[in-house]
Length: 158
Image (cartoon, rainbow, N blue to C red; front, side, top):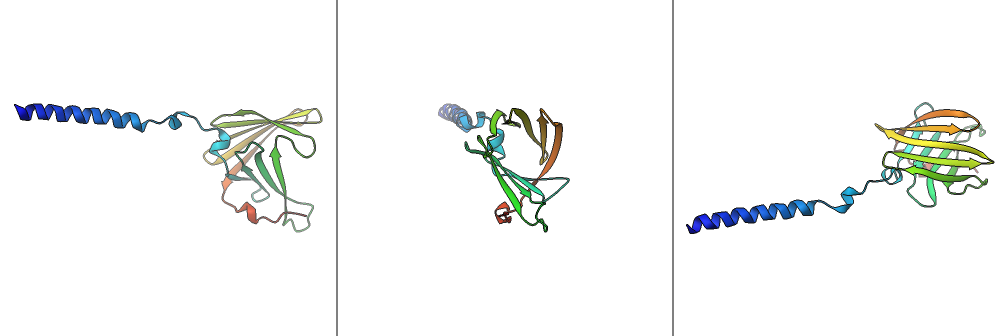
């Protein structure tokens, strides 16, 4: 009889232990969805059609959303890149505003001289699609692929 009671207590103990472990395995961080900028922070991209002529890197920072390195075709050898930071306020008076920064989409609006451009970034299978909607130039779609190029090693034009 004592063995039977001990057996039942042992089973109840393990059931209780299983419940405690399963509740502790759930964490509040798992419930919080990651934003696009958090998810792709530090990732680098280059166009699929014109590889190595342009690099884009997302930055999850309040001051800089992303950076671009574009080859300077005015340079005869085309060996140096011009570097651009895209933050809330650009050097030439343009402003950038985040419209959406959800898990799978980043939408930014660039306003310059009364003209508005809306850029929508989405990623599928390591391909970044950028849809550019411009109030004066219409729509354009760019495809970029993920790259591991050392952008810190690029030669910046003077």
